Length: 72
Length: 356
Image 1 (cartoon, rainbow over the protein chains, first blue to last red):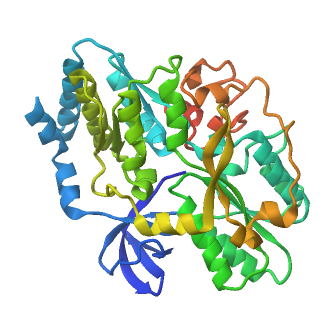
Image 2 (image 1 turned 135 degrees about the vertical axis):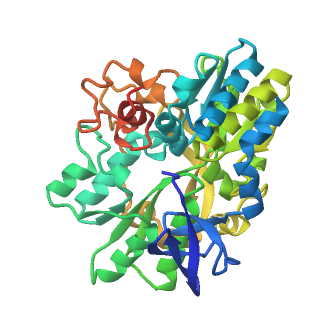
């Protein structure tokens, strides 16, 4: 039930935002992510933006197998 | 073999090499992890060196029969029920919301609690109750719906509060020699809300490691790798592998909102009984939005699941889904006998779907 989906904020009106999920657009609330801005990549659960995706950290994750290689 | 797959296999080989023949048991406590692990076939790839267990991470699965009975009672009073779809088929004494809907009760599936508020606004008269199950990931959305209903000045919207907090059952699991867990794959989205600090006791009190992990197969392998490393080195800490989403303090605004609307309460978990301060109830100031308060819901202490159902043991990792005598015979997704087969994120449903 804690499934949450990444998307991009394309519009904000008060606490309502429009999120683009690779072409499909749906409404979500930014009540608990008040500093969300248009263009942010976010994680949405049950109609609420719960977290922003940190791009630098995402890049680090992409290199996770390289890290595993190094630790060996 | 493509490069990605090769990297994947070599990472798993490295985990096994690091353990040097030793065997470890890791538990995840999130239904989304259960499904991700099954879908990627990780259980098979990692065994026998790493055994992956599913814990009490599916909200539908840990909701006790007595709470489901209360929701059925509400539906029978002519109240409109708005619920996440997974709750529809959970049977109590042979009945479910699905059965009641077929008999004419107004039961509606929603994706967001806000949709339940929309339904309440659209009804001229008639009450709407949202079935508030979920962990800390979902609780802010439910709190947000209460705020929204208050802003819209609705008098016909309330929540049946059956929310639970994740860290408490982990304490019980850590203490159980019977379950025997060496480390935890911690839930990514619960942690997006609560951060990493609430899990510290796992390392400090029980000397067991935990890694907050994302949901891609690579994320899970990274989580397992970090756990195996800590276990091999004899260290215990709480690490964040899902750092692109989880901050150490979590989501401060969400925690503040939860704190404003809810307070901790004792809560009953399927398989675990009543755990102190493991649930969230609606604060008195918001009792107009509390279905329990509005409708004086009776208690159903005798509400019963199918007595042959072993979900209570599956939830604790004491029994693998395929070790339950009902699994795959009497209990299948189209005719489920217990919540772990009903919920799409239940351990039994995941094992069945992916042929484990």
